[in-house]
View 1 (cartoon, rainbow, N blue to C red):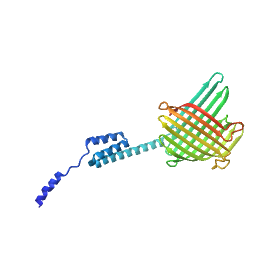
View 2: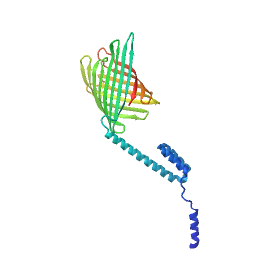
View 3: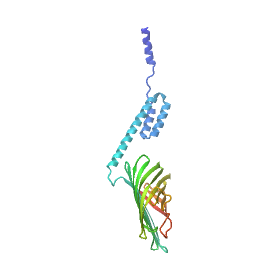
View 4: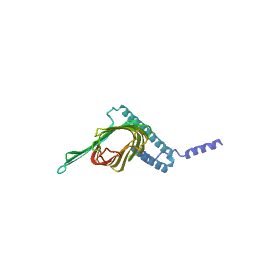
Length: 314
């Protein structure tokens, strides 16, 4: 019986199929997808390879797992290099921003000259973001200054969580036509990044504020206030972006959390439409509304400015 069993074992060993290797064209297809570094493409090719080569699923999955592990390691190293570069950067490094400039000049019966300029720069760190903004609008018509408006603000932000942040704000304004030589505001509070996408950004913030106004009449007024704000950017077409920036400061006469029954509410609303001309150069149309519920005597509540400028990013 032992003699008859031996040939059967030999026959079984010969009849058993050898472990199949992944066909070379399939392997080449997977390697080509991996070479692109696109996880989506690799996932698609891997699923197709598994469906058409069921006998080689284990080998295909091993190749996919090795690719994903290598990809995660590369991302981890890249993030570590990014953080190290931020930590080692000097105070004047890693600032990015944009400057804009526009002007007008007319001669003849009603000679006039106008200038509009702006600067926005930002430095993003690991947890902190620092923003500096400045604006200037000046116009002289018939030898008389008809617009003289300046604005500057510094805003640091600390990222508490993925969407929650704390902010601080120091702000200066001058608008002699509206009736004040200087208006200072400081504020601190919390903000929420409601939407953060490549094509859409929406951030909201709120907090108490202190504001001091120096009027052109020589009078001064210092009041506790509340600040509400939101920033909205939407790229709705290739190279075209709609921007909306709003800061509303409501003076409350001492109750910083109440803003609806305030003594004086000011609203600065700027809506902009940008169209890219080249990689870093864009044209921008902006419409600004400045509203004060209690303007100085002889002044109106609402001022508007329309401007067209060229914007250069850096």
